[in-house]
Length: 254
Image (cartoon, rainbow, N blue to C red; front, side, top):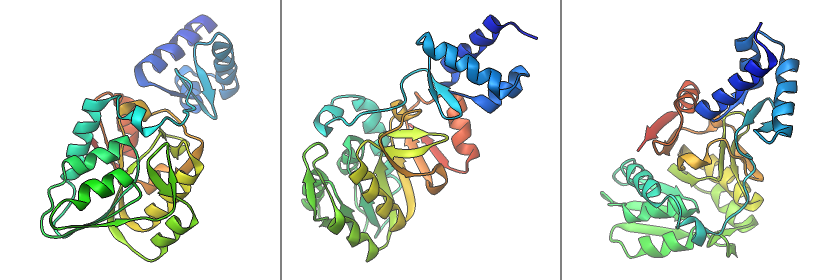
């Protein structure tokens, strides 16, 4: 049996390599009980070497706070552009799609080249104005309360609209992707609207750079099994990529 120090080193090495560890998997791998691993994680958290979550641990605080979209637009720009380019390739001739809010999703408009007639439903004010100038694109701007942080609309009237329509695809930006907890947004109103968008879509496509993995926002949207495609960048770890594909989700790495 390995020593406590060796066990701790192994846990931290796995965290550095994979970006997360699961209690049950680590217990099996080290041939100890889950109680032992939880005690190890508690000790390492007290030393500020990791953050515990339910059934797992991560090297950084998984809880993410809301950031204004203007600030988000300044970070991970190259990654977001590549993600948006890949997402645009999924739009089909004569398609009807939903584009949610967020800095990554907003870039989608830069790369859309409609074939035939394209109908776009969006909560994003910036996306609506941008796409409205394009030929062969009909834009439906959702009504509701305008959020200054995201430059998008939310509310009861916004959500009710999705009870009357169906679209082929939803392009969704998120603040957190957690293998156990699921997909999250930092704002609960945005999260509730995202749920309605998913229900009105045949396919849900997540557009998120690799910094979103292992993070959790305040508002929970859904489990991973509700997601069809995730588009991200090459910063995603190999173990997370395998877990996503094992869950039956198509993974596109730009």
